[in-house]
Image (tube, rainbow, N blue to C red; front, top):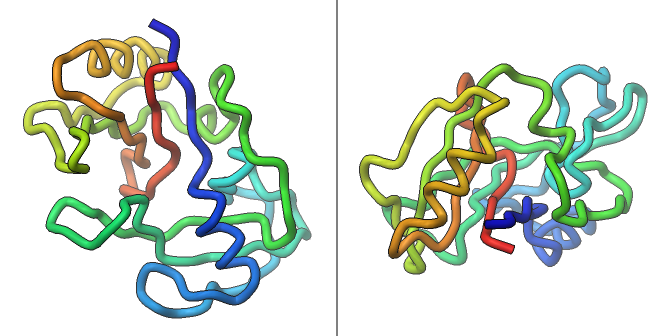
Length: 155
């Protein structure tokens, strides 16, 4: 099975860049990146040192519901090229491990799928989850801070 890594929702990113509200109804904070651990959820690369970035509350789900986790994310403040979905994005190369969780089409966590996964095993675990009946997508989160990184779907 081939998989694709998805950028954060383009419409949401455009809204945040134009001053629109984040998941908590607040405008994104604008800061200058120190170049360390500031992965943009659009291009899925680190925001370079000295470049302006946004910090905002993100909820990568279509609506508020009990399984719709919210957490902080970074975005390049200026337009960047969204990740094309092919190959492992740089955002998933900065940590030795990540938290993966499978969700169904109703955006509900499928119990028993959450697992701290070594970076080198991430794709294999995601493929195994996506092969299960009822799994619509897999979210990748920081194993240390629980921040949303990217979403994985079957290609």
